[in-house]
Image (cartoon, rainbow, N blue to C red; front, side, top):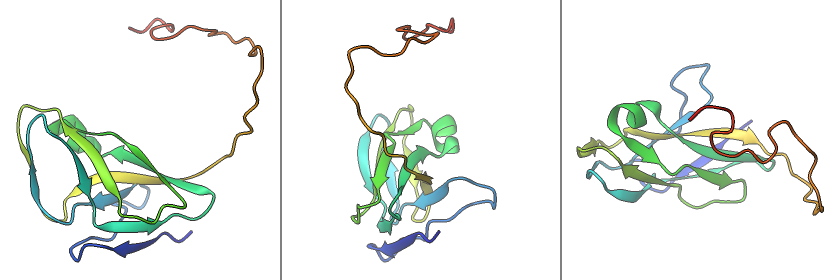
Length: 141
């Protein structure tokens, strides 16, 4: 499969896999900035991508940024028909500012096939072992 992309910002980097077996492509910031503690922002990545029909791009945290530095993304879905610039919604949950340099990794995107569901209204749902058990119903708190 080909994943076409175009640069919107002259410093934008090509999405890339860090290792041959990786599932997610790394995405990068085109310009450096300081992400203040407690700040929430939408970060433009300077690229647009063309996801093939029948697929979707799903944005996930870079584990090092979230686990080590408290930078949490809001995730996101990039639909096949979207051709605009990709932005990442993030929040700095740490007690310290974090400085991104131009070209630093910020998020990863997984390209996944999409299955279309047929939505059917009904009066009752099929019984299951879990039933209506919600948060904590498996015994984990």
